[in-house]
Length: 424
Image (spheres, rainbow, N blue to C red):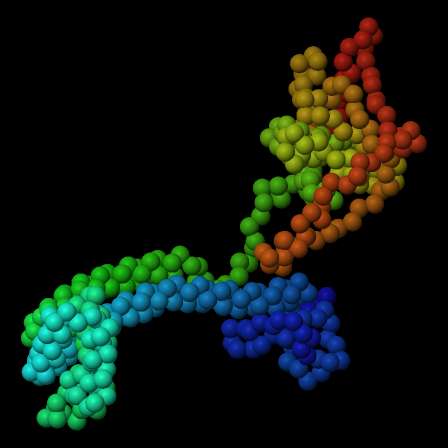
């Protein structure tokens, strides 16, 4: 029937067409709530559904690509910010050392007088605590030199003073807060100033090296970001056809216990299944209906036995795809191991395509009703997988009973020997 994309909003996500139209919902028929809405009609309902979700996925893909690209460039921004912060710290250190040196030169007389007083006190053998008390008392008494002292650390021969620009300095200099300067008591003011200028020079060299290294780090980060962005698939188009699995050239289904069951469409495909895809641990399933094609059940690992419920489902699949479906014949399917399936008779003659020789006994399955359904297995998004883990686990073993008709069909030649049957 016809289908439409458009109409009143039903909830959930919508997609935007390339011409700016917003798809709100899809429906198999025109409904009353669609009156007055612009509708797009398609030849088949599936075409409308495909168009609707293609637009949703396209927008999601564009958003995902944009997010990944933004994340790649965000790393570059972080590198730039870190390097700029480091360079800023070094330049601030340069400026602080320069200012300390200049202030020491401007206030050299006062600083030298203070340092001389401290050295004199130490020379007289004054205790450090006594010298600290003397400085504090002098500052409270209005001594300008003592008032400059912020703290004494005589164990390290250090005194920290607060220096301000003189009255002849610019207005900007005068409004700046006092600068704390750590001095070596053993040296003069100018000697301390030279030490700060030397520190400034060393900081300038370090700044230059840091800037060069920062440029290299940023270029490296940009190169990595460009490579990351190039690796991101920027195409937001939806694939018209999904990639198919190798098994989809056959008739197939996944059992309730997560086993893959493969059946041929014709004789040549039956040959292909038996020769190439019937592996260790796999099971060959057939039935005694003329012209019936077999199927194989892929084991989940060579050491894992195929579960009974899966065998029952595979047997039903073989019967429903055989002439029993048309004739409504209720019978049993059977299964054998891989090494029981052969293409040559005992005489050495090779059988036609689709026919096999079964050597040994067949394990018959219980008779089953000729019922077969069609299911659709889909994945909305990768995170949905975790919510469904273990759903197709192996069920409890089916109990075999006499009433179920499970028996071994054994045939043999006179005097004992291998049973040999031809299956078409």
